[in-house]
Length: 139
Image (cartoon, rainbow, N blue to C red; front, side, top):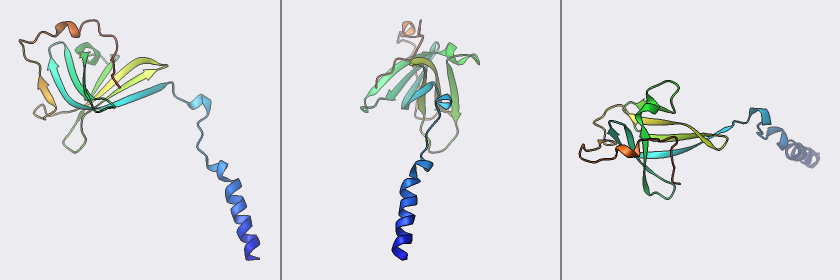
């Protein structure tokens, strides 16, 4: 009797596993996907941010993001300021249907934090902020 009951329980468990599978219906799938990177340093410039981040091979890479992306509510960028805590700053870049959509920078509020820096005035990088339409990521 115990063997029959045990076999019946196993049969129900193995046949019922598909009931617990998590599948997302096609109409609920998102057209967005994202890449998230650790931000090592954010340099402020009068025209935008120069961001140093670590790519997937742990190499430091830089990208230039115009300030105008962050000045309007319909811009391509959003800055979320982190308070004190253990969370490290990050950059999240969103794509919609394979094309750049927008980005979020999660940065420390305190400009005295080690991840903030300022581009020296004598360094001319103005042209790197001109005509930027999307973030070029290096994976």
